[in-house]
Image 1 (cartoon, one colour):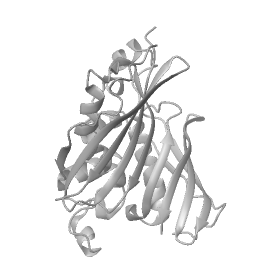
Image 2 (cartoon, helix red, strand yellow):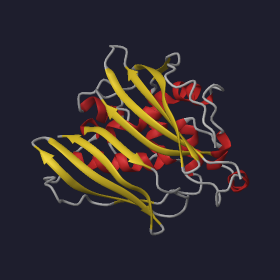
Image 3 (cartoon, chains in turn cyan, blue):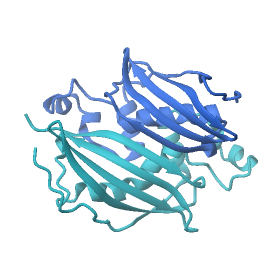
Image 4 (cartoon, helix red, strand yellow):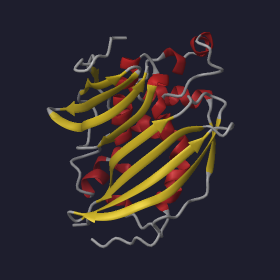
Length: 147
Length: 129
């Protein structure tokens, strides 16, 4: 399958995301999070947090709009029906809490072809309202050939 | 929290996602790809049926690593490759071992299995205790 590398290196416009308390709870419940600081405001405050703590993998929520814009860009050329998630890496900085505003910028880092499949890699960088880098991500998507 | 010395095994984390786990995760994450929601669509694109989001499985791996470390603030990095798709209504087990330790810095190797198959293998987590 042919891959088009012309859009490699492109940096997409940043997206900002307001972290809501109920969204943290909804996400925490969906993944079975048990840490009370992610679910119970009193527990979070008693532990010295300003509000509920976002589980580390909540990064997918605040990165979603930015990563989707990159992946859906026609110049990147992903065939969505044949897409599978190949790999993922996150590196975390300071914790994210409800009330934070996180801004994420995504770069289309690489596309390659191996064993008949296309591998797309994106990099994300997310910073909170203080400019602290809260998360850096590497997203690898695999597109299988259509039969 | 255990001592987390090299070679230590983490307490396994076992989760059986229910029938609507994929829908719940889609709503929570915003990823509504129909391969996670619609059996017919999933089969039409060559999958055996609807599958769970890879990032749902990764969240279980992250939870196992964070719980071993004493909380989410200790998980500094997690890197993995998806080896196979997880399905709803079958138990997923996350296991891990301490690969290395340097003072407060701990490296874990984790994997996730379902129905005897690896869905994540060779995941690496970095903890700062």
